Image (tube, rainbow, N blue to C red; front, side, top):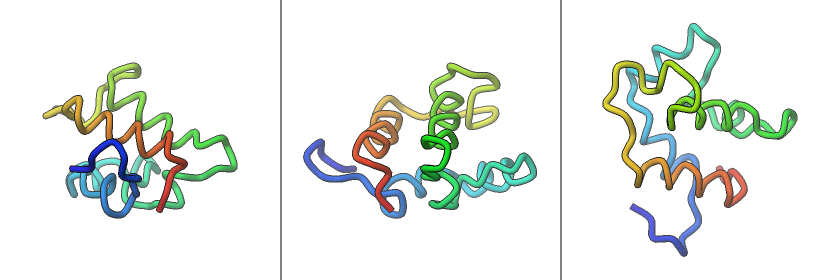
Length: 89
């Protein structure tokens, strides 16, 4: 796990948080959890990453990952740090 001073990257820190079952479950819904370009797409002000975050924290339902176990505060904080650090690959 990263300490707060280390930059967070999608490939090293965020992608591994998504289980393969989650990735496969979301593909038919056109949500590409394993695709950096999809997740970090700046064209729409990073709406894809923000939407995923809303489902991860429970601001939107059904909460992700479907059926749980839900992410820990530490995992959610890491995802948030990836976003605030500038969506690094």
